[in-house]
Image (cartoon, rainbow, N blue to C red; front, side, top):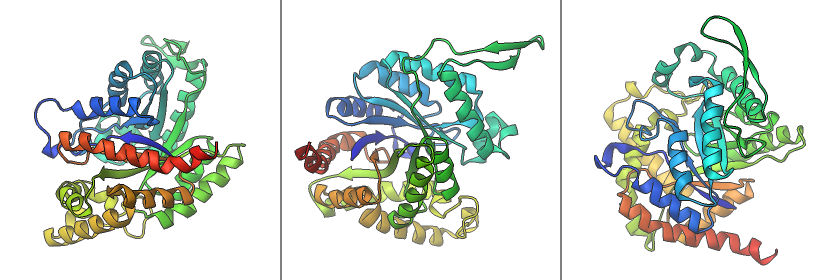
Length: 351
């Protein structure tokens, strides 16, 4: 099992200064201690995730302070951009990092984000597929047909050329099984999470993804984002994370209620009474804490890792910035590294 750090902050508890200390210090720690990657997202116009409006910018910052860790977008919202700009920006980061870039592409999950490109909202799922393919081709050095400012046809490619000849790609899914299949058919990795789905549900979807991947002669790669904070005492950790985690779940209520298209559980959070929201958030917290996150002690978290391994997850992407104070989170990384060492020890002993 690989371990990486994942960022998607709910910024409501943060200070007005030093907002990116956790990202940069966490990246340095991960780089020194054998973690696989650092993921930063794309989110706009809201405190929930809004620290990260452009993952290529945060990726460039991480590239300049690290030496070996992979630098990934989790995710680029492809329909908000021109594929040429995506390829250009990330080629710069690939050069800054010496070839350590990887991108997960998403269709977008919030209509307000599409203020940047409203014409793509209705067809965003198909646009995701088309743009992902275009970025991959541009990365390989192909050119695309465009129209310039005078209306004349041109063919253009990307400069600077990237270091990696092939761009490592994932597709982000909130749980829709067809997106899992599409990722496999595209020969891409899969990035998913446990908001709106549990490990038992996920097992069947990963099986569908692997089957689709094998049609292209690939096994694929599954990265699972989970909320993470570890300590030495179970009761202490539970009380430490309860408030921040409940605030985080309340902020992401659309995903919590299964807002993905076609879900039988689709509910409009704005129509719920405050006490109903509190009840749902408390129940979700109990479920995540007990069975769906790396929260608590190392021994408890190790059991979650083994369950994820059993359903064919390749990488745990540890979401660490869900509202605890930065100093607390950074101190807890030592426990997370213990978990990484513990869960990789049996594999290391056989190689």
